[in-house]
Image (cartoon, rainbow over all chains, first blue to last red; front, top):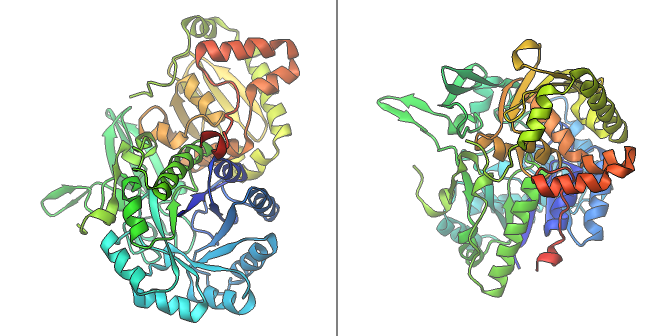
Amino acid sequence: MMELVCPAGTPAALRTAVDAGAHAVYCGFADATNARNFPGLNFNRDEMAAGIRYAHARGAKVLVAINTFPQAGNQGLWHAALADAEAAGADAVILADLGLLARAAECHPGLRRHLSVQAAAANADAINFYAETFGVKRVVLPRVLTVAEITAINRAIEVETEAFVFGGLCVMAEGRCSLSSYATGRSPNMNGVCSPASHVVYAQERGETVARLGGFTIHRTPAGGPAPYPTLCKGCFTSGAQTGHIFEDPVSLDATQLIPQLARAGVTALKIEGRQRSRAYVAEVVRSFRAAVEAEAAGRPMPESALRRLTEGQAATTGAYAKTWR
Amino acid sequence: MTDPTLPVLPRPLATAARVMPLLPLSLALSALARRLLARHPGILARMGSQARKRFLLEFTDAPLVLMLEPATGRVSARRAAGLARHDAHLKGCVAAYLAMLHGRVDGDALFFEGSLQVSGDTEAVLALRNALDDAEIDLAAEIATLAPPLRPALGLAERLSGVALSRARVAGWEEHA
């Protein structure tokens, strides 16, 4: 059966994910070492150890995301995260930075290493480099690949691949996108936050909800109607004669119906995005996708997704998996 | 747009809220909030400095607003939203707030569909939401501990109104299989 890798932003969400049927849960420490460094989220050292014990007692794994890029002169924070993840009993760490991968391979050789989507390894040569150089066992694939491209990659590599199937859809070369930095001075790469809440302002103006990020107006929507989060790559902009969602619409990924194709493409694990979401989201999405991977393993048709309510913009897409890039 | 699965506060309760004296209500809600904060210290730990912010909760189906100050556990009931200085302002129906508190619905989903409106300090709102979500609060259980005879009435009220008064229970995967 394909492995279902589920998000947990809090200890309660971790327990919820495990109870709802996650094979593995990914989470991070409450600091700049993980790419979901949001207010009120994440785990201190005791919470991480307790969460891992809870998961292991129920047959689930815990993968610790240490997937930002260490800041010069402050690498100690990232090195401590590696050591503490291993001490807590993590089943793997999810890393993006070359130096941190080297450190993990050298100082924590027994700790399984996964390559974060933040590393943006989008071809077989890059993946093989990470595997041969740092002993990476699994690669989280960027959300810019088609199923055909994933098939080609898996034919040319030896390591496992993990593909996103649900949640917020980053459409950029992750780890290299500077849009958030441009508008706010803070980025997922260095600070663990994309379009951070500290720079988000919603205002009611002339019958509209106006969403701003760092002073830039990203969306205007009718007051009381559906409103997306002001993520820059899903904003409404004017470029030349065109006004609209220039990069990507404010929609979420839902690849439920593509799971059999991803299985045939050689994908080992399916990942659900959403460490910043509530345990209600975790429970509903994990249950739905556990049913889907069980169905795939049994050769049954994929269940119809009933998760549209949980998606940004109340709309879902199959993302790059089934289309060519805009 | 509002979530059709969320019940509107029953008219008798909305009427009661209109005539309810504000001082006793504020005192009772503050006592409950302080009890919750004492029993769930992780709330303030997770919120950090955001706990010092003032949150104005406006209801679309009750003629009341509540000002919540997590750092002190103070909750004050008022009649109108425009009267009080605040850092963050949330607007939604009573059932939406209670469903979020009890892990029955996802706050982002309520926001995306327009059932919950947010303005002001977004970071403070996220900190509050995340801290409360981790606390796994069960209001019915808390109130029943304070006043055991109320337990059956709370259960009945939840069933009749459809408003979540108790924590969501996550069924194990095997129970669905």
